[in-house]
Length: 171
Image 1: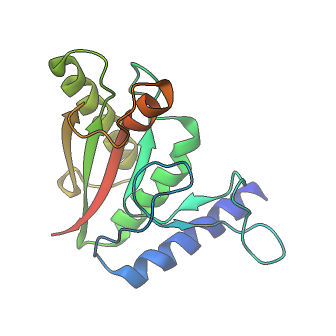
Image 2: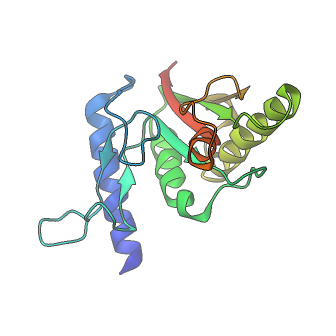
């Protein structure tokens, strides 16, 4: 049953992406306040869509944002299903490729944060490669603490800045 829901979500997400071809689509900031992107919902209630708090809710596979814990670069288990949707899309669309932009919060030296951002981007790339995505379709870059999305000096802002952005590009 759970697999059927995840499969349904993947199909909804792929349908949304196929309508956008390979163009970057930017929408309003998501409910968590983190980054741009459009959200699609998974199958769930009688309307066919999960509510906004459902664990089956995934973002459409473009302009994804994956957050990390403090001083960590392991992909969160909650993000694996969404990254797998991205991997399936990339494997199925030869013209699509992604740029993974690793980021860190302002704490730590510039050099440390560049290295941490790169490790975060590489961790997401490793999950995509595990889905069969060719290395030639993935570019990684680290901005360290140079491109924050939140300018505060509190834990909420730091959490928003500890991320990898997945940006779709055309070849």
